[in-house]
Length: 139
Image (cartoon, rainbow, N blue to C red; front, side, top):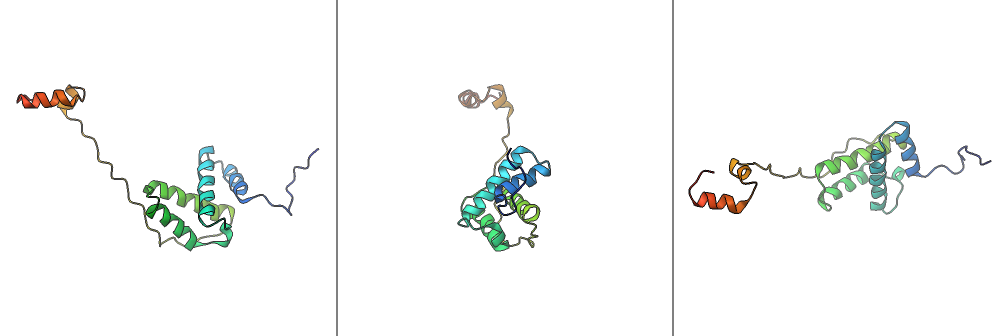
């Protein structure tokens, strides 16, 4: 029978530690997947350096890179930030000082779509609306 006790000389890898901590805190499986992905990207961005050997400057550099180079939305940047803060506080037991030097991503510029009575009446058939308007009718 295989020994199921953890071997202190061979601790679990960081991403496995992250997954285990997320599960003990009863986060959703989707949160586990997303947080693990962001931590993996963070490590790869810094050429596979261990997060324990990095600090605020590296976290700020990664989050600013997401905004400046990758042009992610502010909610995506916030998700990455939450994942990294979780890693440092809950897994590595390191309290990061306040992250102040981050270039924030721009909020999305989606304009609301306004439905006009004409558009609704013709089922968004632009040709029908234009011919109605051309005839001087208020359709």
